[in-house]
Image: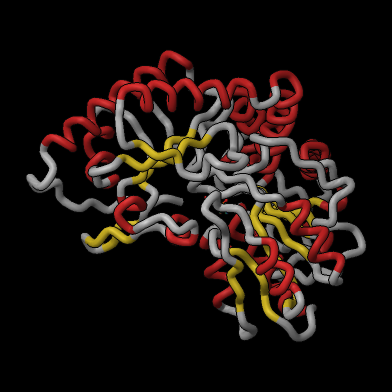
Length: 385
Ligand SMILES: Cc1ncc(COP(=O)(O)O)c(C=O)c1O
């Protein structure tokens, strides 16, 4: 039972089928002038139109990258080079691809606080904008699934003339995102979060926005991202984007939300002392972040893994020491509660039957752990991407 879709999703069959020929028969370099090269170029351009359509963007605004991390690092480095004095303003709950990248800059990085629901504190945000040079706020949080009002954050930044980057890696394909009338200048996405392959993503860079590449070389992607393109990955991402758009158009959030709600209802009906983190505001329809009073998340993971239920802890554990996540601490969640959290994240490949069974196994694991509490469930090493 794979309930860890925010870490990565299984590849869709259609995506796999579309990619295969570009890994074997059609292996040509898309920059080559041969017939095969031309075909590869055409396939990439078709994928670019599929990705642009998902985002409500123009084709020339899509730059293919090796994933979300590269897209975010590229945009942050570019903004740092091109913007004048001022802080890099972001939030305290961003993914490490933003926070670690921001730490490399010579300018100050200001992490705007969030409230208990995990949403940006708007007064603090507006005040911090006054001293900022550029801004990056995520569309949805990878741990809690909290959806940020990224459109509002972008508008407030633009009102002060600040360029705005949005990390939409977790939001895309789960909630509708349209860049057509938004104030977002740059947006990062990653295929493996919406049933595409790993190692491929894209940076949306709005037409007319100043931009400097991170990678220089052969001048691919219109000179904006050098390096021979991952044609199979790009084709796969295009198909995944089209499927995501079609699925959202057909059923909206209904399927994902019904899986999550059924799971939560079962768990909460049978257990006392369960808290749904981030549930006070808008959440991604696929994410359930639960704290289980009196249980170590790391111990629960072991018990659940044993029953073939895959999920994540909400905290990183290193060298035997479990560290509460920066996201939960920023939301004012206590260390103990943070360490007792698990993230369950669903995809359209999960079934109601599966999540109901998983809920029963979670209830049993929590009851077991509560009953043996203090009898030495050892530390483990778990990574929550
Ligand atoms: C919110 C968020 N941003 C960025 C990334 C990095 O994306 P990638 O794995 O494609 O480098 C992730 C991956 O987990 C993520 O959840």
